[in-house]
Image (cartoon, rainbow, N blue to C red; front, top):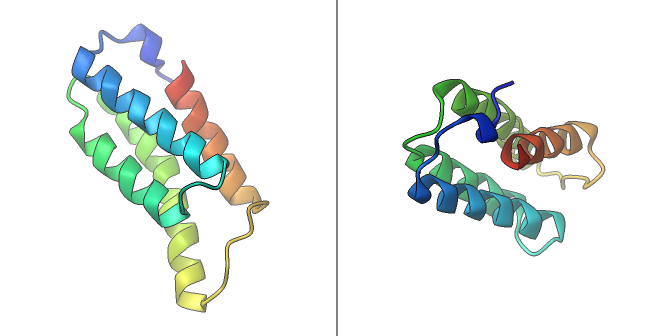
Length: 100
């Protein structure tokens, strides 16, 4: 896994990454919905300019898990359990990518 600390990240990208962390934190404290989390992370990810492409691909992979969980729940008209193992795993990986 490529770490953020190993990259020469612009000040602009540092702000976007900070917003990503904040959005994840808001979701984990139940202050934003999964849909809002997905939308915000996607928008911020596409704004990144100086981040390694492999890191972006890794982040997108776990972001996409969130997107799939949301889409399936929406299609089935079901609620998403906060204890869903796939959800928790994706969140853990996203937090790891953002913290290193």
